[in-house]
View: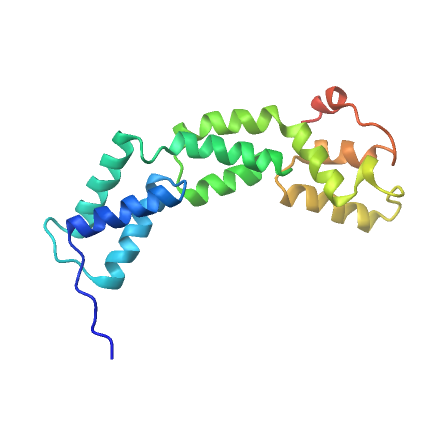
Length: 180
């Protein structure tokens, strides 16, 4: 039978944090949640209280540059835009990662700049609009396509403009830019 592991102390929690940030791109909130979970699992034997120790450690890591919410947000924006997701999907991801408003501004600018390109990538992947075999005639299918665009984080006007393009046409990103 396994013996229970001893409660964590400051040095152990710092080692866990170092291992976590070397393996994953993360935010302050995600690192703090990870460390709090580890303390809940194993207990705490150190001084000061666990929540204070975790908060101080997270801030120290942020000061040293091990954790950078702004860089995380911008990398997430580039990744989601390249994968065909829009600004609202980015906002959801940043909220879930605990990125603050000030740190998310650059990421939102990246998403806005690549909105049309991302929507076209999404349309190509889903074979919608100019990438479809045939135009959508059924209003319910059109609604489903619009809903898919919106779940991916794209605006209604841009999605409708892309769906209105005839299959096989070459989309003009500059013309679609007005709709984003």
